[in-house]
Image 1 (cartoon, rainbow, N blue to C red):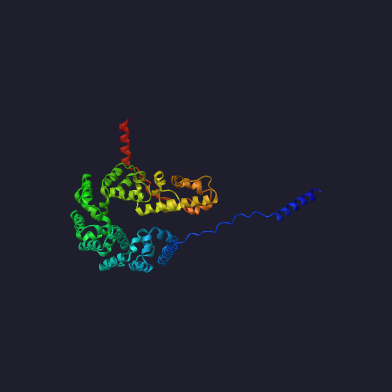
Image 2 (cartoon, helix red, strand yellow):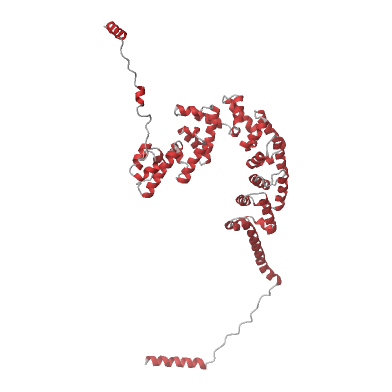
Length: 461
């Protein structure tokens, strides 16, 4: 019943709605559209066209650079950072790269040069320098020298005149082209020096005792010698050597032997000599250190300090390592570098470990460092070590103790360790029976000896 009533009510409401006349709302006003001016269309489409042109230019330049070996992953960021390259066409860029390749610059070096100094890609700049280099016969002959000179010239907006002036001065003193290229490669700023200053520095070398016919050897062994001024560096340095008690003849002799002595800092030799005076080492080691005199020994200390600093130590730490391990002063620098590279790249340890364990640089590389490292790495991979070993645990134990701890319990390690292994026969120091040669000779007592002994004994009574 309720449902019927609800249907009846809905029906009546529906009929009333259909029969009644609804009031319609007023019609909306006609839409009005703003009048579009002609310049509004151009302002919206112009940036899009400009962006497309910019994008096409980037793609064109990127394709050229990629053909010449530039890494694809760096192209976008390179062109974004150096937007001035968009002002040159791909044809001009290809011509510039062609000039650089004509100068025999290797591909990896070429990419490095462009990344560090993209301004060298300017074609007019390259064409001018190509003519200047070819005038003296350097075009394509010494690529590393050409790279350094071009980078410097581009950064300081230099023309080839300074280059030609420097070459003429060096050739005038008998320096060969190979040595000239080494000087320009190591110290390209020489092209920024005037001719008078170059003459002054070279003539000073001749005044202190370097013969004219030895200048080529001096520049070849120490190409950057021209970077040091006469008044502010060379004269004070020689004065310091004299104040340390060295004669002029000795100083001249040492400089001729090793021109790199002139590259020492003021006060550096005195610091090295102070280290030598405080050394505490065995007498044979000290004799080897000073076998060629105190001046030479001080310079050898300087070379070792530079070697250690090159690999990451500060100067105070380098002096500390040398003081704790004086044998480094008589070791070759190549051997020291080989041990440091093994420490950092193979053993994956920090170079700072040498300050705490300088003995690492004093032990034999082939006979002690490598075998011990191989044993420890084998045991570590096998899980035979219950704790982590440091550099001190690897170097400090004696050979016998290391063998008893890490080799003897594992027979498979004896071959890689070598010494004290069962298959190696340890030879005695002297041949068997050699002691018989040192046995005192026996002599029979004569009657005269007996009488003398009796007289001596009676005199005591």
